Amino acid sequence: MSTKEVSADTITAKRFQLVGDNGELRALMKTVSDNPILEFLDSSSQVRLNIQISNDWPILNMMDKNGNVCIELGTINDKPTLFFTDKNGNLRVGISLSRSDGSPRILFLDDQANVRFGVIADTEGVPRVIGTDQFGTKHKLLWFSQEANPNENDDKRAST
Amino acid sequence: MPACEKEFPSHASSVAKAREFVRGYLTAWELSAGDISDVLMASGEACSNAILYAASEKPFRVSCQYEGGVLTVKVQDSGRGFVLQGSGLGHKPRALGAGGLGIHIMRVLMDEVSFEMSEQGTTVKLLKRIAKSKKPTEQFQ
Image 1 (spheres, rainbow over the protein chains, first blue to last red):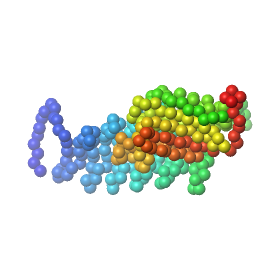
Image 2 (cartoon, rainbow over the protein chains, first blue to last red):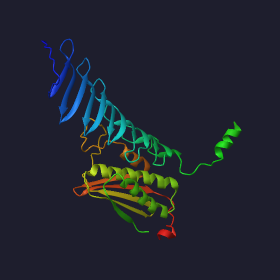
Image 3 (tube, rainbow over the protein chains, first blue to last red):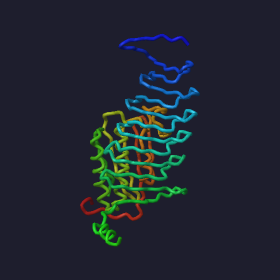
Image 4 (cartoon, chains in turn brown, red):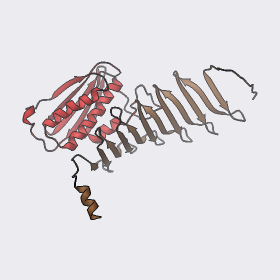
């Protein structure tokens, strides 16, 4: 592959390619539907990482060796979001902040999109932990709906 | 106690107002704090989605009804809704995609969550079965 050195203050193009020593494509910058995307390829020419702006949301995707997205990080709906997806594209772990009030939530899901374990804080910051068993029954593992007894912690300290 | 219904502007600040509207209805029934909290959080998620996905400046409508031990909250907007299948961020049609965890949270907090989508808009129906129904307080009778 012949190369030519170019020097310029500004280069405008629809597509930039980065190649390896043997001319193999290793990175690509382009636009898709007017959205910018930067892709990085592994030694098997599989895209393993991309960074893009989609719907005006910044998104970073990491793929496995088969090209399946397994980690997605972005500012989705104007809130930070981290998704772990399995090889079939099912969301299995999701971490994000609420769009309306910024409260945090972490969800573990099975391959049928059922929440099996979740940690959620409501608008007042009250934490709650919920689990779903193999039969689909929801269990409220930690559910602060009543005010705590102010003397309870003092009693515990005294007994230790 | 009859169902109640109210319209809210399609603006982020309406989520908190809609929650307070729902809270007012629930408080009248003297439900447990845990049930109220569940319904409020799920309602807030539904309202947030209504504002986000409606892609319209038309107001959204919230209605509440408690009958026969079943509490139903409906959030209706005038948008086209979103695709329920898939949850990926970058490799799905984002313009219609359900990007966040809101739907999963609604489902884990409520007994049933359903979506009706039509040309007129999208209605999210949140349902919670509450075993021991109490009469509404005098204030709301």
